[in-house]
Length: 246
Ligand code: MN
Image (cartoon, rainbow, N blue to C red):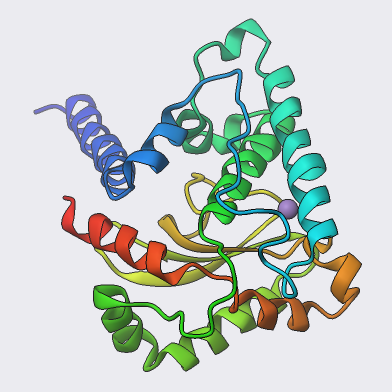
């Protein structure tokens, strides 16, 4: 084999390994998540699975109204507008995330904004003090972080450590390992720009628009409130699907 051929083959293996990782991670998603990743413009906003006052007193109604009807809606409208350019015809969210480094900032930010918020709403529900992770998710959290309490401490630390606007995530990687990460702006762990790639299991929006009306500058109070409205039952059952799928 000559050198050129060798390099081509090596590059081929490298590219297919990266592609495989992306497919692996996508395969770990539930049907709803896959549908969203594969959707093309024009994007629409799905209805919330709960009333906007259902998360009181932890997430207040006015913040939920503005966050859903103004902020999230604006990401969708701006994304649809930016994707009108013919060269982006047929682009899915997955395609945008896979080449986030090459996308115009307006598309990267608004595509991330749409996916991140849709996912965030999907893992929240009305307060339930008995609500904790279950099954394999609980076992894996305890293996990785020692205890659910320690996990919450680590996640809180990451959320407080994000300077400015961004998100904090609990993810599963292609080897079924859990890890916490944090991304700036509207980036997410699907993006090829993300230092650690993974499929999000849990998300927390730490933009000030998510908490300022009720908690002002006290991000830690908002994070503590968040634990009361996390839908661990749904997250735990989705997780069973994720780890069983190849
Ligand atoms: Mn937000």
